[in-house]
Image 1 (tube, helix red, strand yellow):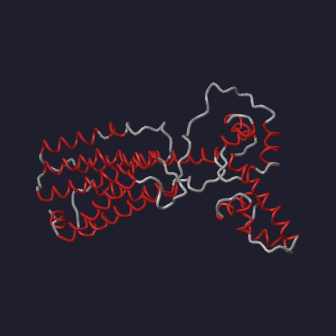
Image 2: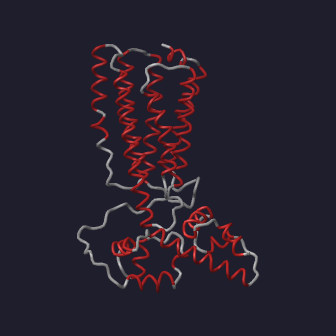
Image 3: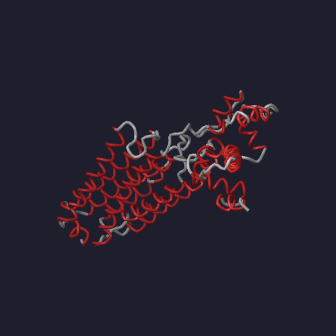
Length: 355
Protein backbone atom coordinates (compact mmCIF):
# COMPACT_ATOMS: atom_id res chain seq x y z
CA UNK A 1 0.00 0.00 0.00
CA UNK A 2 1.13 3.53 -0.75
CA UNK A 3 0.30 4.67 2.79
CA UNK A 4 2.45 1.94 4.34
CA UNK A 5 5.38 2.90 2.11
CA UNK A 6 5.00 6.51 3.16
CA UNK A 7 4.75 5.85 6.88
CA UNK A 8 7.66 3.38 6.91
CA UNK A 9 9.79 6.31 5.80
CA UNK A 10 11.92 7.33 8.77
CA UNK A 11 11.08 11.03 8.50
CA UNK A 12 7.37 10.33 8.68
CA UNK A 13 7.77 7.97 11.60
CA UNK A 14 9.62 10.78 13.39
CA UNK A 15 6.78 13.15 12.53
CA UNK A 16 4.23 10.63 13.82
CA UNK A 17 6.28 10.18 17.00
CA UNK A 18 6.48 13.94 17.47
CA UNK A 19 2.70 14.29 17.25
CA UNK A 20 2.29 11.44 19.75
CA UNK A 21 4.65 13.08 22.24
CA UNK A 22 3.03 16.49 21.76
CA UNK A 23 -0.44 14.99 22.33
CA UNK A 24 0.64 13.16 25.49
CA UNK A 25 2.41 16.20 26.95
CA UNK A 26 -0.59 18.45 26.20
CA UNK A 27 -3.00 15.92 27.75
CA UNK A 28 -0.91 15.62 30.92
CA UNK A 29 -0.63 19.39 31.12
CA UNK A 30 -4.41 19.82 30.96
CA UNK A 31 -5.01 17.14 33.56
CA UNK A 32 -2.27 17.94 36.06
CA UNK A 33 -1.62 21.67 35.92
CA UNK A 34 -3.55 23.90 38.31
CA UNK A 35 -4.25 27.26 36.73
CA UNK A 36 -3.56 28.49 33.22
CA UNK A 37 -0.27 29.42 31.61
CA UNK A 38 -1.80 31.16 28.57
CA UNK A 39 -4.37 33.26 30.47
CA UNK A 40 -3.54 33.14 34.22
CA UNK A 41 -6.50 35.37 35.10
CA UNK A 42 -8.99 32.91 33.62
CA UNK A 43 -10.43 29.87 35.40
CA UNK A 44 -11.17 27.38 32.64
CA UNK A 45 -14.01 24.81 32.73
CA UNK A 46 -12.91 21.55 34.36
CA UNK A 47 -15.17 19.48 32.12
CA UNK A 48 -13.65 21.01 28.98
CA UNK A 49 -10.11 20.39 30.25
CA UNK A 50 -10.92 16.72 30.83
CA UNK A 51 -12.55 16.19 27.44
CA UNK A 52 -9.71 17.98 25.66
CA UNK A 53 -7.22 15.78 27.53
CA UNK A 54 -9.28 12.71 26.56
CA UNK A 55 -9.22 13.72 22.88
CA UNK A 56 -5.47 14.33 22.96
CA UNK A 57 -4.94 10.94 24.61
CA UNK A 58 -7.09 9.28 21.94
CA UNK A 59 -5.14 11.12 19.25
CA UNK A 60 -1.87 9.72 20.62
CA UNK A 61 -3.39 6.23 20.88
CA UNK A 62 -4.65 6.45 17.31
CA UNK A 63 -1.17 7.26 16.03
CA UNK A 64 0.23 4.33 18.00
CA UNK A 65 -2.43 2.01 16.57
CA UNK A 66 -1.49 3.01 13.02
CA UNK A 67 2.24 2.57 13.66
CA UNK A 68 1.54 -0.94 14.95
CA UNK A 69 -0.57 -1.63 11.87
CA UNK A 70 2.26 -0.41 9.61
CA UNK A 71 4.51 -3.20 10.82
CA UNK A 72 1.71 -5.82 11.07
CA UNK A 73 -0.53 -5.06 8.10
CA UNK A 74 -3.64 -7.12 7.42
CA UNK A 75 -7.23 -6.39 6.48
CA UNK A 76 -8.47 -7.42 9.93
CA UNK A 77 -5.95 -5.21 11.75
CA UNK A 78 -6.79 -2.31 9.45
CA UNK A 79 -10.51 -2.54 10.23
CA UNK A 80 -9.85 -2.94 13.96
CA UNK A 81 -7.76 0.24 14.00
CA UNK A 82 -10.48 2.06 12.04
CA UNK A 83 -13.15 0.90 14.52
CA UNK A 84 -11.04 2.05 17.46
CA UNK A 85 -10.68 5.44 15.78
CA UNK A 86 -14.43 5.67 15.19
CA UNK A 87 -15.46 4.58 18.68
CA UNK A 88 -12.95 6.79 20.51
CA UNK A 89 -12.44 9.88 18.34
CA UNK A 90 -16.03 10.88 17.52
CA UNK A 91 -17.26 10.82 21.17
CA UNK A 92 -14.21 12.75 22.37
CA UNK A 93 -14.76 15.38 19.65
CA UNK A 94 -18.42 15.62 20.69
CA UNK A 95 -17.32 15.93 24.32
CA UNK A 96 -15.06 18.89 23.52
CA UNK A 97 -17.71 20.74 21.54
CA UNK A 98 -20.52 20.19 24.02
CA UNK A 99 -18.28 21.09 26.96
CA UNK A 100 -17.62 24.50 25.41
CA UNK A 101 -21.31 25.26 25.96
CA UNK A 102 -20.84 24.58 29.70
CA UNK A 103 -24.22 22.89 29.93
CA UNK A 104 -24.52 19.45 31.55
CA UNK A 105 -28.02 19.05 30.15
CA UNK A 106 -26.38 18.09 26.86
CA UNK A 107 -25.11 14.52 27.48
CA UNK A 108 -22.42 12.78 25.43
CA UNK A 109 -23.75 9.22 25.66
CA UNK A 110 -26.17 9.42 22.64
CA UNK A 111 -23.12 9.56 20.36
CA UNK A 112 -22.13 5.96 21.09
CA UNK A 113 -25.45 4.36 19.94
CA UNK A 114 -25.20 6.43 16.77
CA UNK A 115 -21.84 4.76 16.05
CA UNK A 116 -23.32 1.24 16.09
CA UNK A 117 -24.09 1.14 12.31
CA UNK A 118 -20.44 2.03 11.51
CA UNK A 119 -19.18 -0.67 13.89
CA UNK A 120 -21.56 -3.26 12.38
CA UNK A 121 -20.42 -2.39 8.86
CA UNK A 122 -16.81 -2.71 10.00
CA UNK A 123 -17.44 -6.17 11.46
CA UNK A 124 -19.11 -7.22 8.20
CA UNK A 125 -16.03 -5.96 6.35
CA UNK A 126 -13.82 -8.23 8.49
CA UNK A 127 -16.10 -11.18 7.82
CA UNK A 128 -16.16 -10.53 4.08
CA UNK A 129 -12.43 -9.81 3.97
CA UNK A 130 -12.65 -6.85 1.57
CA UNK A 131 -12.98 -3.08 1.52
CA UNK A 132 -16.27 -2.86 -0.36
CA UNK A 133 -18.08 -1.43 2.67
CA UNK A 134 -15.46 1.23 3.43
CA UNK A 135 -17.08 3.99 1.31
CA UNK A 136 -20.38 3.46 3.15
CA UNK A 137 -18.60 3.63 6.52
CA UNK A 138 -16.78 6.82 5.53
CA UNK A 139 -19.98 8.49 4.30
CA UNK A 140 -21.81 7.54 7.49
CA UNK A 141 -19.07 8.88 9.79
CA UNK A 142 -18.69 12.16 7.90
CA UNK A 143 -22.49 12.55 7.87
CA UNK A 144 -22.58 11.92 11.61
CA UNK A 145 -19.92 14.57 12.14
CA UNK A 146 -21.84 17.01 9.90
CA UNK A 147 -24.95 16.35 12.01
CA UNK A 148 -22.93 17.16 15.13
CA UNK A 149 -21.75 20.44 13.58
CA UNK A 150 -25.34 21.41 12.69
CA UNK A 151 -26.44 20.59 16.23
CA UNK A 152 -23.58 22.69 17.59
CA UNK A 153 -24.61 25.63 15.39
CA UNK A 154 -27.96 25.83 17.16
CA UNK A 155 -26.33 25.06 20.51
CA UNK A 156 -23.84 27.92 20.13
CA UNK A 157 -26.67 30.25 19.11
CA UNK A 158 -28.63 29.37 22.26
CA UNK A 159 -25.45 29.68 24.33
CA UNK A 160 -24.88 33.19 22.95
CA UNK A 161 -28.40 34.22 23.92
CA UNK A 162 -27.89 32.81 27.41
CA UNK A 163 -24.63 34.75 27.76
CA UNK A 164 -26.28 38.02 26.84
CA UNK A 165 -29.12 37.36 29.23
CA UNK A 166 -26.78 36.69 32.16
CA UNK A 167 -23.44 38.46 31.63
CA UNK A 168 -22.42 42.05 30.98
CA UNK A 169 -18.91 41.24 29.72
CA UNK A 170 -18.39 38.76 26.88
CA UNK A 171 -14.58 38.56 27.08
CA UNK A 172 -13.36 34.96 27.60
CA UNK A 173 -16.92 33.64 27.28
CA UNK A 174 -17.98 33.48 23.63
CA UNK A 175 -17.11 30.36 21.63
CA UNK A 176 -18.62 30.64 18.15
CA UNK A 177 -15.44 31.78 16.37
CA UNK A 178 -13.19 29.10 17.83
CA UNK A 179 -16.00 26.55 17.39
CA UNK A 180 -16.06 27.20 13.62
CA UNK A 181 -12.27 26.97 13.31
CA UNK A 182 -12.08 23.85 15.46
CA UNK A 183 -14.94 22.24 13.53
CA UNK A 184 -13.06 22.85 10.26
CA UNK A 185 -9.83 21.27 11.44
CA UNK A 186 -11.65 18.36 13.07
CA UNK A 187 -13.60 17.77 9.85
CA UNK A 188 -10.34 17.18 8.00
CA UNK A 189 -9.25 14.96 10.90
CA UNK A 190 -12.41 12.85 10.60
CA UNK A 191 -12.34 12.70 6.80
CA UNK A 192 -8.72 11.57 6.78
CA UNK A 193 -9.50 8.90 9.37
CA UNK A 194 -12.21 7.59 7.03
CA UNK A 195 -10.00 7.33 3.93
CA UNK A 196 -8.62 4.02 2.76
CA UNK A 197 -5.70 5.32 0.69
CA UNK A 198 -2.99 7.79 1.62
CA UNK A 199 -0.39 9.86 -0.19
CA UNK A 200 2.63 11.91 0.75
CA UNK A 201 0.87 15.28 0.84
CA UNK A 202 -2.24 14.00 2.67
CA UNK A 203 -0.24 12.29 5.41
CA UNK A 204 1.88 15.40 5.92
CA UNK A 205 -1.18 17.69 6.02
CA UNK A 206 -2.84 15.37 8.52
CA UNK A 207 0.07 15.72 10.93
CA UNK A 208 0.05 19.51 10.51
CA UNK A 209 -3.69 19.41 11.19
CA UNK A 210 -3.06 17.45 14.40
CA UNK A 211 -0.50 20.01 15.58
CA UNK A 212 -2.88 22.89 14.84
CA UNK A 213 -5.72 21.13 16.70
CA UNK A 214 -3.49 20.60 19.75
CA UNK A 215 -2.44 24.27 19.78
CA UNK A 216 -6.01 25.47 19.22
CA UNK A 217 -7.38 23.25 21.98
CA UNK A 218 -4.79 24.45 24.49
CA UNK A 219 -5.58 28.06 23.65
CA UNK A 220 -9.36 27.56 23.76
CA UNK A 221 -9.35 25.60 27.02
CA UNK A 222 -7.12 28.12 28.78
CA UNK A 223 -8.93 31.26 27.55
CA UNK A 224 -12.54 30.17 28.10
CA UNK A 225 -13.91 31.37 31.43
CA UNK A 226 -15.76 28.86 33.58
CA UNK A 227 -19.33 30.04 34.06
CA UNK A 228 -22.26 28.97 36.17
CA UNK A 229 -24.14 26.16 34.50
CA UNK A 230 -26.68 27.05 31.83
CA UNK A 231 -29.93 26.03 33.51
CA UNK A 232 -33.51 26.97 32.64
CA UNK A 233 -35.67 28.95 35.07
CA UNK A 234 -37.75 26.98 37.52
CA UNK A 235 -41.12 25.95 36.12
CA UNK A 236 -42.70 26.69 39.50
CA UNK A 237 -41.63 30.34 39.47
CA UNK A 238 -44.70 32.63 39.55
CA UNK A 239 -45.25 34.71 36.40
CA UNK A 240 -45.90 38.02 38.20
CA UNK A 241 -42.89 40.34 38.17
CA UNK A 242 -42.60 42.79 41.09
CA UNK A 243 -43.18 46.39 40.02
CA UNK A 244 -40.36 47.48 42.32
CA UNK A 245 -37.63 46.05 40.09
CA UNK A 246 -37.50 49.14 37.85
CA UNK A 247 -37.05 51.63 40.72
CA UNK A 248 -34.57 49.29 42.43
CA UNK A 249 -32.45 49.12 39.26
CA UNK A 250 -32.56 52.91 38.99
CA UNK A 251 -31.47 53.38 42.59
CA UNK A 252 -28.87 50.61 43.02
CA UNK A 253 -27.51 49.93 39.53
CA UNK A 254 -27.85 53.23 37.65
CA UNK A 255 -27.51 55.85 40.39
CA UNK A 256 -25.12 53.61 42.35
CA UNK A 257 -23.09 52.96 39.16
CA UNK A 258 -22.93 49.21 39.67
CA UNK A 259 -22.54 48.89 35.90
CA UNK A 260 -18.92 50.00 36.28
CA UNK A 261 -18.15 46.70 38.04
CA UNK A 262 -16.41 44.22 35.74
CA UNK A 263 -18.12 40.85 35.22
CA UNK A 264 -21.26 41.85 37.10
CA UNK A 265 -23.66 38.96 36.40
CA UNK A 266 -27.43 38.90 36.30
CA UNK A 267 -27.50 36.72 39.42
CA UNK A 268 -25.22 39.11 41.31
CA UNK A 269 -27.28 42.15 40.34
CA UNK A 270 -30.50 40.38 41.33
CA UNK A 271 -29.04 39.62 44.76
CA UNK A 272 -27.85 43.20 45.22
CA UNK A 273 -31.25 44.76 44.46
CA UNK A 274 -33.09 42.17 46.56
CA UNK A 275 -34.88 40.08 43.93
CA UNK A 276 -34.16 36.79 42.16
CA UNK A 277 -32.59 35.91 38.86
CA UNK A 278 -35.85 34.83 37.23
CA UNK A 279 -37.73 38.05 38.04
CA UNK A 280 -34.87 40.24 36.85
CA UNK A 281 -34.45 38.27 33.63
CA UNK A 282 -38.17 38.57 32.89
CA UNK A 283 -38.06 42.30 33.64
CA UNK A 284 -35.42 42.83 30.94
CA UNK A 285 -37.34 40.58 28.54
CA UNK A 286 -40.44 42.76 28.99
CA UNK A 287 -38.33 45.81 28.14
CA UNK A 288 -37.09 44.09 24.96
CA UNK A 289 -33.56 44.05 26.33
CA UNK A 290 -30.91 41.53 27.21
CA UNK A 291 -28.96 41.98 30.43
CA UNK A 292 -25.82 42.59 28.36
CA UNK A 293 -27.52 45.37 26.36
CA UNK A 294 -28.83 47.01 29.54
CA UNK A 295 -25.46 47.15 31.34
CA UNK A 296 -23.44 48.15 28.30
CA UNK A 297 -25.99 50.82 27.39
CA UNK A 298 -25.39 52.38 30.80
CA UNK A 299 -21.66 52.17 30.22
CA UNK A 300 -21.93 53.98 26.88
CA UNK A 301 -23.91 56.78 28.51
CA UNK A 302 -21.27 56.97 31.24
CA UNK A 303 -18.58 57.24 28.57
CA UNK A 304 -20.42 60.16 26.95
CA UNK A 305 -20.66 61.97 30.29
CA UNK A 306 -16.96 61.42 30.99
CA UNK A 307 -16.04 62.67 27.53
CA UNK A 308 -18.20 65.78 27.85
CA UNK A 309 -16.64 66.57 31.26
CA UNK A 310 -13.14 66.08 29.82
CA UNK A 311 -13.89 68.44 26.94
CA UNK A 312 -15.43 71.02 29.27
CA UNK A 313 -12.35 70.96 31.52
CA UNK A 314 -10.03 70.85 28.47
CA UNK A 315 -8.47 67.65 29.77
CA UNK A 316 -6.67 65.52 27.19
CA UNK A 317 -7.99 61.96 27.25
CA UNK A 318 -8.30 59.03 24.86
CA UNK A 319 -11.47 57.17 23.98
CA UNK A 320 -9.79 53.94 25.08
CA UNK A 321 -9.00 55.37 28.52
CA UNK A 322 -12.57 56.57 29.02
CA UNK A 323 -13.98 53.24 27.79
CA UNK A 324 -12.06 51.38 30.48
CA UNK A 325 -13.18 53.91 33.08
CA UNK A 326 -16.75 53.25 31.94
CA UNK A 327 -16.57 49.57 32.81
CA UNK A 328 -15.58 47.97 29.51
CA UNK A 329 -13.00 45.19 29.49
CA UNK A 330 -11.83 45.75 25.93
CA UNK A 331 -11.91 48.61 23.46
CA UNK A 332 -13.23 46.40 20.66
CA UNK A 333 -16.28 45.50 22.74
CA UNK A 334 -16.79 49.17 23.57
CA UNK A 335 -16.55 50.19 19.90
CA UNK A 336 -19.14 47.62 18.82
CA UNK A 337 -21.47 48.54 21.68
CA UNK A 338 -21.10 52.27 21.06
CA UNK A 339 -21.98 51.90 17.38
CA UNK A 340 -24.96 49.71 18.24
CA UNK A 341 -26.28 52.27 20.75
CA UNK A 342 -25.40 55.51 18.98
CA UNK A 343 -25.68 54.47 15.34
CA UNK A 344 -22.21 55.74 14.54
CA UNK A 345 -18.59 54.92 15.31
CA UNK A 346 -16.75 56.42 18.28
CA UNK A 347 -14.37 58.29 15.98
CA UNK A 348 -17.20 59.79 13.93
CA UNK A 349 -19.12 60.77 17.07
CA UNK A 350 -16.08 62.51 18.61
CA UNK A 351 -15.44 64.30 15.33
CA UNK A 352 -19.04 65.51 15.22
CA UNK A 353 -18.84 66.94 18.76
CA UNK A 354 -15.93 69.15 17.74
CA UNK A 355 -17.81 70.92 14.97
